[in-house]
Length: 229
Image (tube, one colour):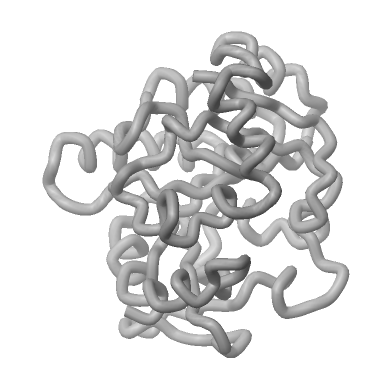
């Protein structure tokens, strides 16, 4: 699998921070938005770039990828896997590789999101929970990606990392989960001129608030239906 580090992103949503793109093989079948079901990266202009990485026409193999991460300057804000998921094929997180990313991120600000399964009693889910908690405890901020507000409550109850959540179309800037957890809409969606580079909320490891992302993109109606469940 190939991985690509872009030291200064041209993505208007992230702003000029470092971003990485991971092969499509890292995406878990457990993600309900995969393929033709609303995945933003798969149906936006980013898909051209993502496909080149997946096909091995861009990016590098994992060892050189980690060297690039380690060479980033101190305090560098970095959005890991703007497309793709955590290292590891399919539903499984590769713990050894995630530890290597965590080590490379020492003294920097790495943050990301994951749809790798962490709920339930399967061996994969148990191992994934362990790997996510270890990374969050050691400086890489991994947001657990919830499909809806109910799922956000389930993920928050695990206590292994902060939570982000998809919101239906038309959601207000502040909502609450069924169990009363506060969800604020991504400031880049609710205010002009805000980007990841200026906001940084998703890179705060011990926040209590859940970050909500209102369905967007050409398949936003399909995404909204999943978020409303």
